[in-house]
Image 1 (cartoon, one colour):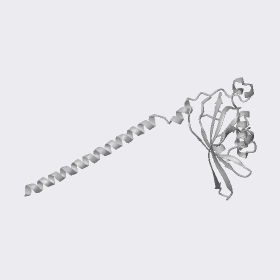
Image 2 (cartoon, helix red, strand yellow):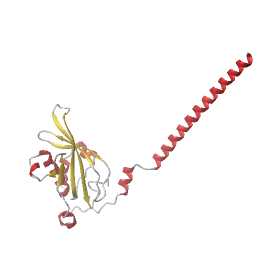
Image 3 (cartoon, helix red, strand yellow):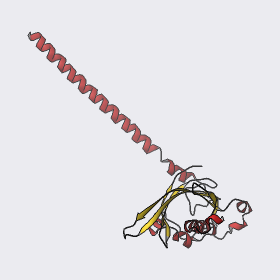
Image 4 (cartoon, rainbow, N blue to C red):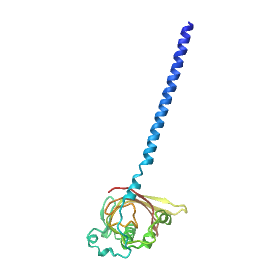
Length: 215
């Protein structure tokens, strides 16, 4: 009977040892996986970083008039808006009295004419600082401009004033991009931006911008 007791104890001891060894093995394996993932993350830079680092920009020329660029002038420089039911340029009569679309016209006209003051007026003061908008802007050869309606919602700000918040997806190209305005965008490539816009009864401005890369 005593031999059975010792035998059972021995089996339990072996079971405990095997369990501990299994736990240690699993722990070491998990630690190894974490170490490998850390090394990969450390050695391989984020895609968005490599994209910005590998972009070659055109030479900056603040005095150049882009209307003298024949190649650019034949491109479609109008602002198109797709609201889900209708897709048309904002100079179309269907959009002629739309306050938001007039804002879009102001925004892209500012880019094309190099009007940095008007461009900054299109952003909140906080976003001007966050995006590090330049103090001087060269004329941007923006074309193939498409704005896609995403959503809208009525909200109330901290002061109790109700405003409408819109989200649009901006898609456009910049020919001979010099990097003064967009340093995350290759020439003639597309990097959509999801733009949040606040519309008050007398004020419209962009309050948020998120970029998403796609050539």
